[in-house]
Length: 151
Image 1 (cartoon, one colour):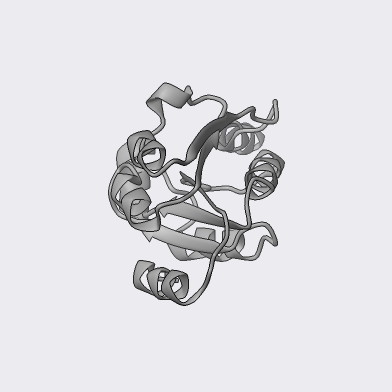
Image 2 (cartoon, rainbow, N blue to C red; image 1 turned 90 degrees about the vertical axis):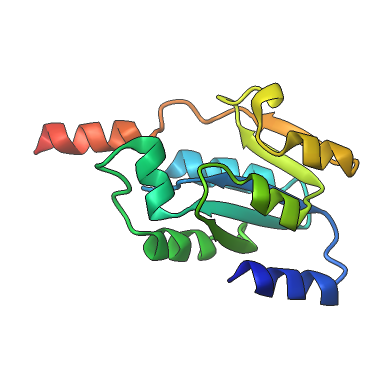
């Protein structure tokens, strides 16, 4: 879905409580699913901001993403807990958060609340910012390392 389509939906609907999170979601694993399900439980709709391929390369390096954005978006959109997937080109979702105006902004526990991008926007509209504990033992980087070792 495009950002414009999302905004049309929001104008035509009383969306209830919108939760927003973002990430690369390169190789989806149980830690991601657990995190996304808990984020969705905080509201009526879960909007996932997904880094574009170029954005992922700038953040993670030249070997990433493993999966192209249309594949990553399709997998995320297939999860029952995910309501909308919106791709963004920038390194942070700041502009997308300004557009979505979520009631709840969520990141994984490796992000202290004070450092969560878009915090000022969400707090400015009376929203809540949360850092959710991550399921231990899961990471995309760890999966890539294991795959390379098994070679």
